[in-house]
Length: 255
Picture 1 (tube, helix red, strand yellow):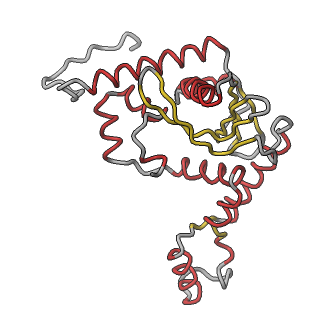
Picture 2 (cartoon, one colour; picture 1 turned 135 degrees about the vertical axis):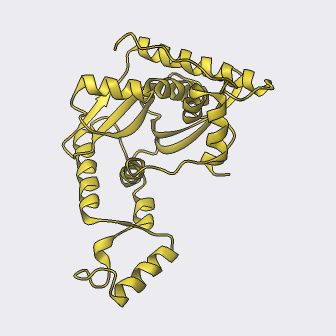
């Protein structure tokens, strides 16, 4: 079964459960389409971590038979149709050049991970139990020699600690880090550290980020709390988060 179609609870599922159990159920029944930012992030991940997959999945738009013409010409239209029928996606030259630049920045930054080592694993699916709930995760990089999990993120303004803190908080990356540490540590029966690798989407650099223990403990507590909500909802008759009445909103204190 496809990883994303499995029933085990992922960190993304926890994000939906945090909104409500109703939101979680809806996310399972109605898969949301990836945003342009998510699609770009996927391309960057595949280029850096799964180059063979990237090369078979995408094709540079400039490789059409007559690059001086658009797809109004028959030869280009037929070529495009042929690529689509093969399931190949198109990537523009500017986008490819930016991804290559981000990859080069990663290589310059990386003096920790032996990307060619058989003990460095990419895109690993891990299944584990937390609080009595079957869970899953997919780790970008697991360095078995140094016991570190790395997670690639594409973001803007990665040079600013304040903005990085805001991003990590707003997207609950602190919970992801804790969730992954627990899952991978359970899998290999030893403690793993966790580090984010933020790749600036403007192509100007890379920033490694680790979280202090207090932040990680907060993330673990949140994950466990949300799993308890999930467990309780499974046995509840009322799974609708919306009350059947009109509510009154008070004026905010900050106005």
